[in-house]
Each structure stands twice: as C-alpha cells, then as structure tokens.
Image (cartoon, rainbow, N blue to C red; front, top):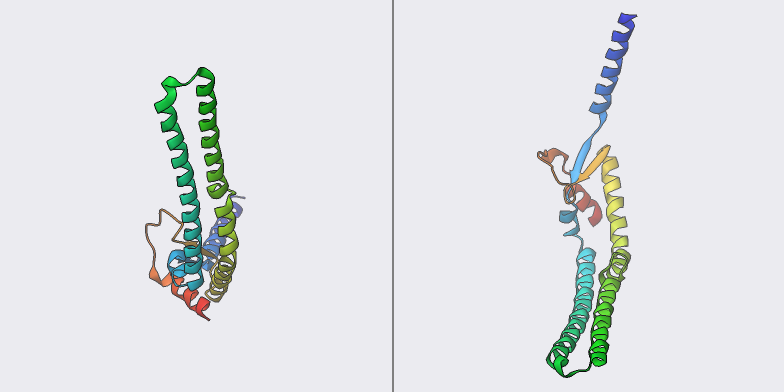
Length: 171
C-alpha cells in the first residue's frame, strides 16, 4: 500500500514536471508595438484634439461660474436675503451643470470613453490577431504584456516576441 502511494506520487510529480516543461511563456510590449502602427497615432491625435476641445469647454464654463461667484461676493452685502439665496442657487446649479458636463465628456461611460473604444477597436482587433498568430507560430501557451504588467523582475530576450508581432502587423 505504501509503495503504491509512493509510485503514484512520483508519477504525478513527473507528469507535473513534464507539463511545465511543455509550456512556453513569452512576452511582448504593446506600447512599443503600437508606436509602430500609424493608425494608432492618428487615433491618439484625434482623441487628444477631442479631449482638448471638451477641456476648453469645461474650463470656459468654470470661468463663467467663478466670475458669477466673484460678482456675487462683491454684491452680497447689498443684496436682500431672497436675492442672495437666488444667486447662490444659480451658482450651485451652474456648478452642478459643469460637473455633469464633465462626467458626460470624461466619465467612465462618457463621450471620450465611447469614442476611444469606437476608434481603437479595429486597431485592437488587428493587434490581437497578430498576437494570436505569433503565439501560435512560436507555440506559446501564454504571452505577458510588459506594458501593463508590473513586478517583472527578470526577462530573457529570447522570449520577447515584440518584433515578431510588429513584423506581422506590417504584412
């Protein structure tokens, strides 16, 4: 009975060892790859221009609220209680409107996120297709992206497939 347990344990350990030897873990750097894709740079420029436009709009609105607040502060002493309350509510309402606009533009489901997803989706699909093809070609069981992975303390350049993915994308 003891010999059977020992034999079974040795077989399982051997199988696990063989299994780990068959795995090929490689890595890429998507930042480096995307830097070589002209369409990606065009999309980034387009998104940056759009974000600048929205930022300018929000800054203009904030300046208008700030001016309204400063005017209120300078006239506050001469205003009736009801007039003060009306102006305070107007200022608060305009501040909320600016925050809502900011969320609409830059929020998690905002215009920028939607536009970014829309414009980057075709590029991401091409990149994923290239990664899949290179992974298959090099028999990789896993590919790690250095651009988003923290804590890598050692890497062997023999397993860097960044250039291969770039070459695939250029086909």
